[in-house]
Length: 198
Image 1: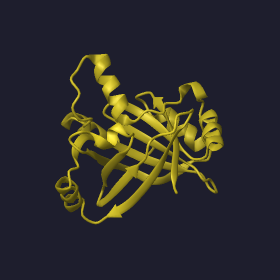
Image 2: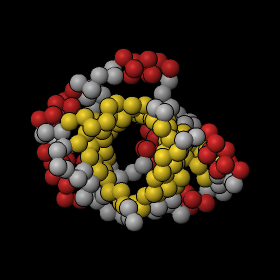
Image 3: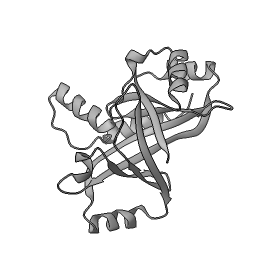
Image 4: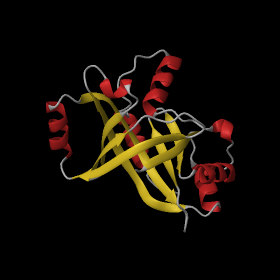
């Protein structure tokens, strides 16, 4: 059974400092910066959500991933059972899920760059989202702590909430009505200009 263990860290708008810190610690880009479009699906009565589970379709370039995540274990890290498969036809799979009662409940997007270190079991993901920039560190608890510390963070900086939760908190703080966490056309133009992995 595969478990995903991770934390998020909030980053400033300018990503130059964290990119330099990653390079200085021996991390290199293992997957170039790509746009991700995610759709969470559930029943009309939110059966999955009520049990802390999710089904997600993620489109990255020409690839589509179907992911199931089980309930998160409480603690310093976010730990969830995860099953993920690559699919050839996102539209067809979404139609099938709709036919059996699973409909889109939340859409969100981000630009993600993946970093790794030679002979390392973990990875670092740099996410640019409509609500700000985040670093995700995935690996064993000890590796997460060591990597976060090397990059200048402490356990007090750890975030274990989902992007859906962070988006709702963002909307509450700004007194705006939540919908989907999507980039505006203006944001997309700016982000596409910034596509270097400097």
